[in-house]
Length: 116
Image (cartoon, rainbow, N blue to C red; front, side):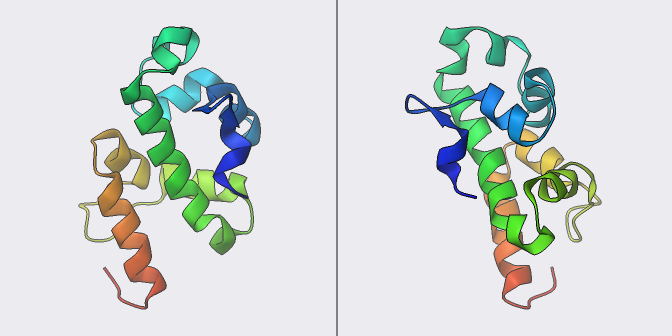
């Protein structure tokens, strides 16, 4: 699916993301490296930091969704599968520490047949 399904009035909507992954907004905040206030208070939901983190998380999951056959499986991979070459860190841990670009590059390398 596309990124648009997670949007509401021009912003990534934690509730829509949570519904798609069958979880809570608070869990979405945690997996994106945000506090629960970031998804509960409207001014915080619309902040640059919150929107960037939500976008990065959704971009990574969206990029691997076809590989796993569903957004739920892609979300499970994001949260739990250690990535080789990153000291056993998961995509979630890397995104939370500001390394979403590294995860996206890793996915591109694996898709191109390069083993990281």
